[in-house]
Image 1: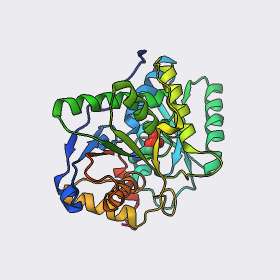
Image 2: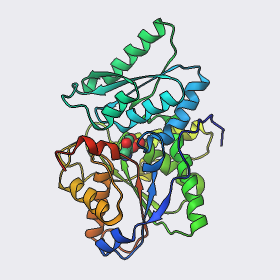
Image 3: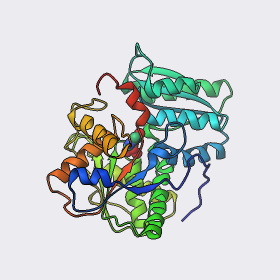
Image 4: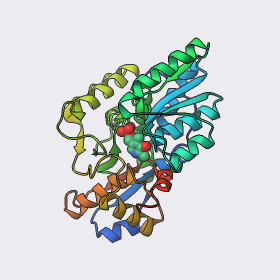
Length: 325
Ligand SMILES: *Cc1c(COP(=O)(O)O)cnc(C)c1O
């Protein structure tokens, strides 16, 4: 494996522990553990910290002084990028899809506390706006570094290849069994990195991605995209592994009313985990993914398997949903 420059932003390894109260409440025959990437320790925590360790490493290598990225109004990725930028002495520009809301709360509030420059644009215009910002900054003699939505390019995805190595070590040290990982999936870097990492480090369990916003059918299918991202990452790392779309297991049945819309699935999951374990999943990603896991367990889908829910963050976004919860 090729060495890539990395900047430490996260407190690793993140905790891995059981959820006895949650498991009892579900009356489930197998074990249920949780991997706490909500506790990465950068801003409000979350999976983007791992990607940003490699993305900022690359930015430093390239002599950048400003980070530019994009996401939704309550993007966890944008908040973590803003926090990473400030920690490393970079400026930060965030392109957020949507109109400036009347009330500034949740992650957006924290973006502003961190002093990020926020630009509002429609969702479709985000890429163009990032390019324009980069261009304007270059003309001023600055050195911008553009990070794609969700940090899901090959460099960012390396963070989750390494995360699987971390998990394998933890499983080995603790003897915790794991037949299946369940994780929220959206821009794909997390799932692609984990699937590649599983092959790299010999993890033999399954990995099930819960699609947060991608439809099963449509113009662009998700698994080929995930395989391509995994393969670009393998090439970057000089690994001899190649993935195919069939390597990805995805559940598409939990899209609800769409991205960022909290429904019964999310509401119940958030409260069930809070009330059995004192742990909070978020409204957009982890609440949806945990709700999917609960539903699959109740339908007898993964009977007696040893499950691991990978908590990818999203907690601070809860504060933007107080009216809906
Ligand atoms: C971004 C995000 C995800 C999805 O990760 P991708 O790599 O974009 O698929 C899951 N959970 C949370 C909390 C996120 O912020």
